[in-house]
Amino acid sequence: MSSSNEVDSMSPVRRALQPEPVLAEESSRWVYYHKPIIIMVIGGLLFAAGTVIAFLYFSRVGRVPYALGPVCLSIGLMFLVTGLVWVPVIKQKVRKGLIRDMYSRRLPI
Image (cartoon, helix red, strand yellow):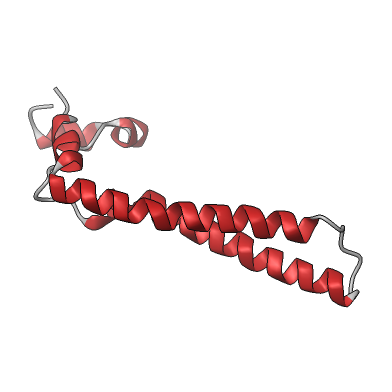
């Protein structure tokens, strides 16, 4: 792909599958932290849903299965804690330059 004309004529599917180079100086924090943030959001939502379901069960407002609330609470808390622990690990790796080196090596040939 030597010219921009070739890139414009590519189909949208080929453009989506084309790996984009991620350079260390151009990369934003989202590149490093998107996975733990998504895990923490999912965990928070599951934890909140488990809290609501457990409240509904114990207040006997609706017919809620017995184990549904505690299962959602525990899985949500597990995801939330995993994401919270993952963030300092990534910070430390970014400071040491391990992740930047890994992303800079993935340039297409």
